[in-house]
Amino acid sequence: MEITVFPDGRLAWPGGTARCALGRGGVRADKREGDGATPVGTWALRRVLWRPDRVAAPQTALPAQAIAPDDGWCDDPADPAYNRPVKRPYPASHEELWRDDHVYDVIVVLGHNDDPVVPGMGSAVFMHVARPDWEPTAGCVALEIADLLRLLKDCGPDTVLRVVEP
Image 1 (cartoon, one colour):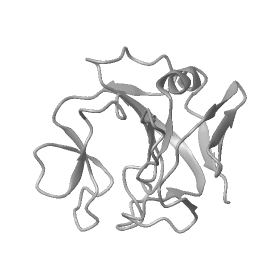
Image 2 (image 1 turned 135 degrees about the vertical axis):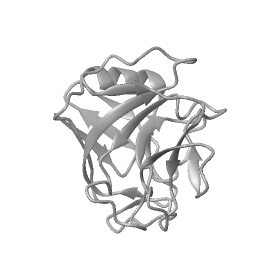
Image 3 (image 1 turned 45 degrees about the vertical axis):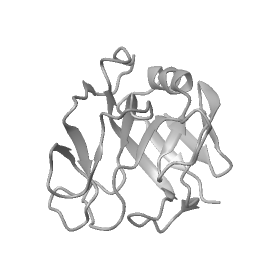
């Protein structure tokens, strides 16, 4: 199955459509660390992470794992764990996955810059929960939680997310 993300903030798949928030840097084919852009391309859905104190395990055929308060994701291009999960505290720059807001209550890890990882080409590109005001992301694709959970029901190991070039 293919999920298509359009630069105007629409996401479509055979089971439906939804509004989505994209990166504050727009949609770009030449994604770089820190540019705030959502990368153009076709990305596998690697796995689903969820915050078990806030939501139940999503219904999906994708691999799924609950996150813990010490989970993070390295975003330091000079670190050997760049664009990989880490346990906090962690000495290099990283994102906290256990957040006060709700954007990481459900996270879909996308296969962007992970096979192989190239330092500086972007990290922590996820599909996750949108902010209530639809604020742009730091380069991810964000949906209302109800839409994200509905989409995940249709996803399996062969599902890909395709971000269309503007």
